[in-house]
Image: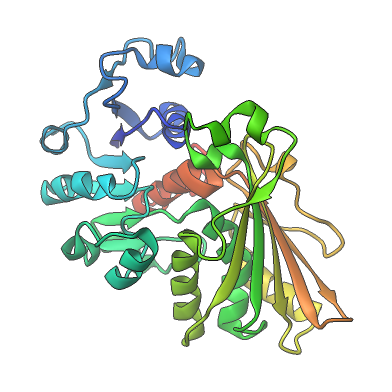
Length: 341
C-alpha cells in the first residue's frame, strides 16, 4: 500500500513518518508540510537520516495531493478545521483517509459546534466517515471512506471504561476522570506557557470543566449505554515529554472487582494492545512510552463503593499515530501488530 502523510512536521506526524517508513507493507510516497516544503525529511526529522535521505517535504495542496495516482491512503496529521478540506478532496478522488484530527470524531454537528466553537467544516462528509476504536468498533467501519482516529485522552478513558458502562458493571452517573498528559500533547507551540521553565517541575489542570475531548467521550459512552452519559473530565499538564496517566472514579453499581475484571477479560482477550494488569498494580507511563499499548487496572474502594480505574498510554503512539496505523492494518486485513512491535 502506498501512503502519504499530510502535515508531517508536528509531533504526531513525526511518529507517523518513523512508523510508516519501517512498516513492511507500506511504501511512503509523500510527506507534506507547508512550513517545511522543499527541505529533506531527514534534516527536519533527524531520526530519519540514512532512511529517508532522498525524500523532500512537499507542499500540501489538497487538489494536487488528491490527483496523485501513486497514493492509496492518506494520513491527515492536521489541526481540526484544516483536515476537512483535505479529506473532502481526497475522498472525492476515490482515495481513503485516516484522520488524526477532531473533524470527524463527533457524529453530531451541533456537539462539534458547541465544543469547538465553529460550525462543522463538512457535515456531508460526516456521513461517509466512521469513528474507529480498533478494540471496540465492529467490522462495519471498514466499508467507509474516511476513518476518524480517537483522541489521546479519550483512548485512555474509553478503553477501560466503555465496556464496563455498556455491560452495566459501573454506574452511568458520577463518573470522574483525571488525566495527566506530557507536554507533547499540546503540539509544537512556541507559546510561553509551554517553554521549559514554565512546564518543568510543575503540574496544573487546564481546560476544565469542558475540555474539547469531553464531547467525544460522552458521545461514545452515550451510544454504549443507550442513554445520555455526562461525566466530569479534568485534564492536567504534567512535566514530562510523552505519556498519559488517567485515573477514573466511578460508582461500582453493586458490582464486584471480579465482575469488572471478567468483563475486561472477555472484551480484550484477543486484543494485543490492551494489557490488563493485576488489581494491586498501577499502570506507569514509563513502561508504555514508545509502544502502541494501553495498560489498565482497577481496584474497588469498599469504603466508598467506587471503582478506581487507572490507565497509561503513549499519547503520540496509542493516542494518535500508532492507533492510526493499527486502523490501517485492520482495514487491510493485515496482522494488527504489523509495523507496531
